[in-house]
Length: 89
Image (cartoon, rainbow, N blue to C red; front, side, top):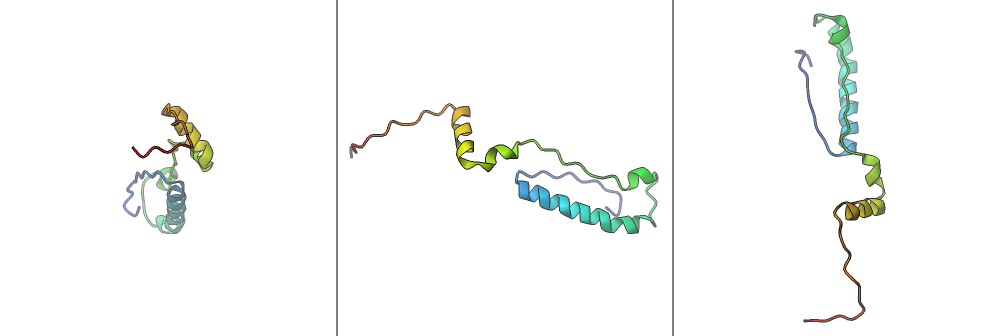
């Protein structure tokens, strides 16, 4: 960030996305004071924020039972018939 670099990150874990967002916000806050002495050109773009794009719907998988049912439907899985008789062959 000191050299005006830009970063791209990808994560599949909702917790890691939150942690990374917090760390970037902390870096931006500490660099705001230091950036006054640096010249990046346009003042509006010198401290441009960042964006988080979600490609997954995390709310679907918060309920484990519902997630399993959705996966079964999507994969068109057929449950095996249950029986009380056990055949050892």
